[in-house]
Image (cartoon, rainbow, N blue to C red; front, side):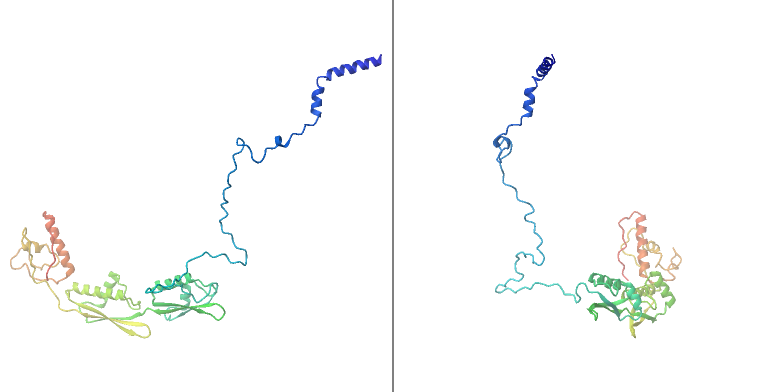
Amino acid sequence: MKCFRRVRLAAATACLWAPWIPQLAAQAQPPAPTPPAQTAPPQSAPPQTKPPAQPQPKNPFENVPQAPPPGQQPPQPQQQPAQQPARPGQPQLETPTAPQLPPAQGQYVEAVDFRGARRVPVDTLKAMITTKAGDLYNEDQLRRDFMYLWNTGRFDDIRLEVEPGTRGGVLVRFILTERRVIRTIKYQGMKSLTESEVLDRFKERKVGLSVESQYDPAKVQRAAVVIKEYLGERGHEYATVDPVLEQMPPSSLSLTFVVNEGPKVKVGNIRITGNQAFSSKFIVRQMKNLRPIGVPHSILFENLFAKTYDIAKLEDDKEYIRRTYLNHGYFTARALDESV
C-alpha cells in the first residue's frame, strides 16, 4: 500500500514538471560556439556600418621645433651672408655693429664718484640718483640718473664715464661742470631809474634774476628788455641796454648792465590822416595817453604841456580811436601803423 502511494506521488510530480523540463534543459545546456565570421566583423567593415578608410591627417605638432638635447647646438636657419661681394663700380657696405659697453653683464658697481662739484655737496648728489655702490650695473638706470642731474639746472655740462674697478666690478664717474653764479649786479649809466625800482620791476615781471642766482642767458636778456621798457615809460624810448659779463674765479660772474638812456622824447605834434567823417581835433581828443595837456575846446590853450612818448601808450590810443569809430557805426575802421 505504501509503495503504491509513493508511485502515485512520483507520477503526479512528474506530470506537474513535464512542461518545464525542456526549458530547464535548454538553460542548463551551454551555448553552441559560433564561427568567427559571425561573431566579430572583419577590419574592413561594410560601407553601411563604417565609412571607407581615409588618409589620416598630419599631426599638427610635427613641425613644432623641439628643444635640442643638452650639449647640442640647435640647427641654424640658412640666411643670406651679411656681406655680399661688391659689384664692379659699386662701393662695399659694412654691416653696422652695436656699440660695446665697457662692463660685462652681471657686474656690480663698486663706487659712484662725482668730480667738478664745488657748491653742491657730494652726499646731496648721491641722494639724487638711484644707482648706489653694490648694485648691479644697469645702463638704463644710469641714463635716468644722468637726465635727472641735467634737469636740475645746476650744471652746464655732464659727462658719464664707466671703467673697470679693482675688485671685479665697475666704477661709475660723473664729471660735472657747474653753472656759474652771479655774484654782483651793477647798473652803469642809468639815471632815470633807481636800483630798487628796477628790482621791483624784475619781481613784478617775474624775471628771476638776482644776486647769488645761477647764470641763465635767457634771464639776462629778459632783464635787459624789462629795463629798456621801463626807460621807455620814463620818456627814453631810444635807450639801449647791453649786459656785460666778467668772470670771477673760480666759477662766478659779475654782471653789469651798460645803459645809454639817450634823449628824453616828448610828443610835439599829432597829425591825423585819412579821416573824413570826423575832424582831426576830435580824433586827437580820443587819445587819452599821448595827447597834450591843456584846456579842451580852446584855441590858444589846448596844447600846453606835451607828454613823453611811449610806444605802449601809443598802441592804447590807437585802440581808443578804433572804438570811437566803432561806436559811430564804422565797423571796418582801423588805425594803421604810425610814423614817428
